[in-house]
Length: 152
Length: 370
Image (tube, rainbow over all chains, first blue to last red; front, side, top):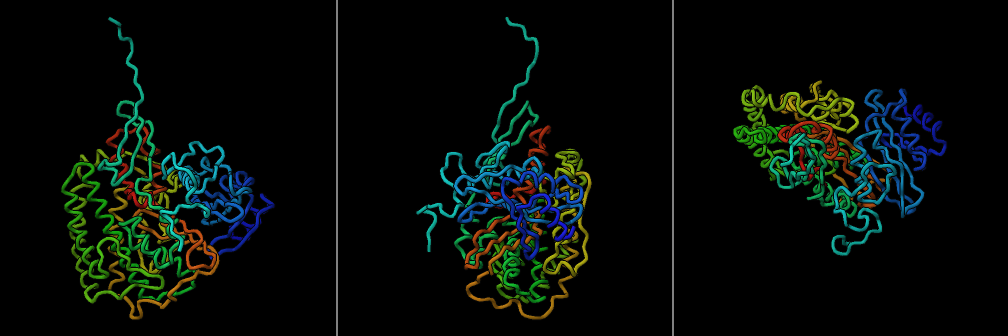
């Protein structure tokens, strides 16, 4: 599918989607509550069949958080970037996609570890890099650590 | 005396690592075992987590380049290249042809040296000490070339945004050709020593299988994914630098077992040699860098650059808001995704199989922990 066809396909599924054409990929920003439905359709529909999730990132913005999914189809060779925007910055949550793309289990644990984003229905949501009893979310912009982070 | 009526097995746990020699670094695996059969493998990460992504949010783009070769230190040049290409994409700078060709030659030398080390260590993991010596004997020639080119043998930092730090050494072409000639004679020895060894085959053929669907779902890239038939070579699918102008094959296999992954890497070394041969006599004249501003500020926007390291697809995702440091920078490391498939490959096998599987995934722990 071309980017225009993908754009029509996604906006038919999720009317709240906002689009932006980046230097490489088509970006679609949606509400986090609609992510699960869109992800299932993108993965399972034969027209799109996005079977390869190559990057999953959490991003901290002043008012909200986003989880960025970089998707590619090995069959049709097209790619799209889905950005799920959470309502609440302090307690962000979004549905898991770890049953659709198995690598997401690790990547979601990483986003939870650094940003405190809760992935609903994740099979094993624990910290992955940091120790289990650590407090705080160290990649958030308002995280303070006077010893290790020196502002200059 | 109580009569024993049945022999029941009981599941128990064992920690493998963080100092186990076959984990190739500080990785801890929590194994759930039934006798010697593996029921579950749970990797515990973070022993050398340095939070490079957070450090990048405070650094300039030139400084970020120097952090990336501390992640996958065996693909240092290729990691540097990923950030440089990402920054050049944002600045819309076109580097001279000379830079592209030199970058490609050194990337391929880097890939060979990484595979040589992997091959030596893999032999040692499976009990063949000689392979370690053979691998390091040949790798020495490449690190000597790197030392002459930029002064460092391991963490190179030869790339800068806009080109290269300095021009190549006058001896570079001569020594690279000497290495190619030498390695063409010694690479068949690798096959003689390990590939056709009966014990080695017993331990790798049919061990740690993963299907193509699972490999895609787990995001296994590099030789790990290609051994299962997943065509994922970034050099073919999203070519960068001088790869569009060279002729090479993407190595694919169907079996998805340890031996297929092993064979993919050996064949990849032949392809890398062929790429170097095509380019080494055709380095165009010209500048070795484009002058960029002292303080690089990327225009606000998002840039995703991927390259093919020795372990697979390495991605740099830069979110810029126009400042001198990125707003957010994410490294998609190939090792992290490949490791997520370890449980799938190892379940049902023996502990000794797990050692072979970990060797063929080619783990570099700093790349996973970041």
